Image (cartoon, rainbow, N blue to C red; front, side, top):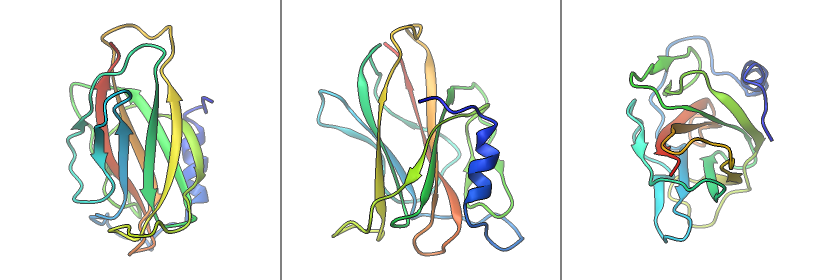
Length: 168
C-alpha cells in the first residue's frame, strides 16, 4: 500500500516527541532487508547510526522482500522509500534521534512493532513488512529505505540506518 508522503508529517505527529532540544545519537533502532533466495540479511537491528546508507544487494523486478524495522516493543514505526540521491541530505530533525537520509520519502507503512523479542540484544520489538517491487519499476533504478521507530532505551523517536539497493 502506498501512503502519500504528506502523511509523513501525520505519522511523525503520532509518535511521542522528545523534549525540545537537539538531536540525539540513538543506537537501538534498526532496519534490515532480506536477501530473497540468498540467506543473507542486509542492514542491522541495532548499532551506531551513519549518514551514509548501507549497501543491500539488488532486487529483481516483481520480487518480494521482507523489510524489518526494529524499535521499542509494541510501539509505532514508520517505513519510507525514496529514489537514491547522489548527495545525501542527512537532515537533523529536532526532537528525533539520528537523521533523515531519504530525499522526498514516500511512506509505505505505518504500524506497531511486536512485543519484546526474547534474546534481543537491544531489547526491541520488530515489525516485518513484505514489500513487492513493482513489475513496472525501471531496471537499474537505485532506491533507499529508512525507518522511524521509538528507541527502547531513551523512549524517543529515532531514524534507523538507511539501506541502498537497486532494481535488477
